[in-house]
Length: 227
Image (cartoon, rainbow, N blue to C red; front, side, top):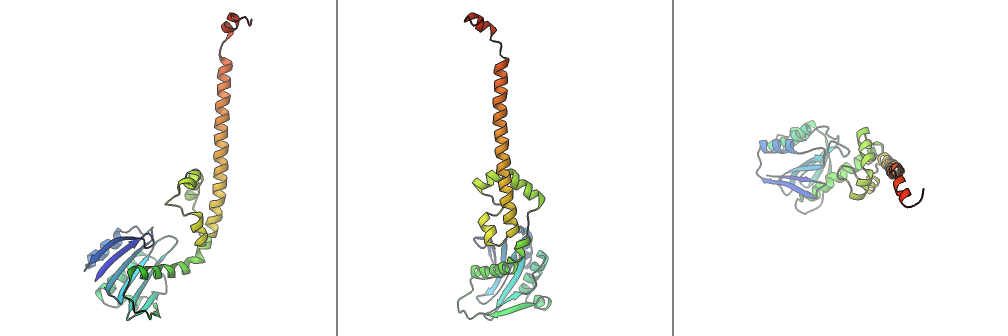
């Protein structure tokens, strides 16, 4: 059996372990930052594997497995990492409990290709993406996120941000409300920073003029015949 962990939407392989133990699975699941998107896969052979993954934020969690060239996707999305761990351990122990406790919908796969973990992951992500696409419309930024975006908008606009998704990503993933929020926040932030910088410049100039006016030049005027 092989244990595989992918992150960053399948672009990074974090772990690949042959013949893992039950404690290896538990430790791996507990060590993952599930605020970010991850996939954990156990495979017995080319056509017998299971995958759990997702995150605890927008994308949600899911599980799928393949048996005898047929793929099965969990109907009701899991709500906790404990559920994902329970499914993996049940598969690992071959006790069939996860099939009795959770309902999976099967879809026949006529492909003769060998098991490809990344391909399976992409299928899992696609299922999650479709399921959450409509839900994404109403997702919005929380107050602290709005404050952070407002303060650092110029910096994020120039350098980008790993924490906040780009305008393109928000549009592609149907985050309509977040897209509107971010657009308004950025416009207000740029305006506020422009006014603040303009005020500071004008204030500096005014202070310089006041300092110049305070300088006593009477002796200089007398010396040069202005008085």
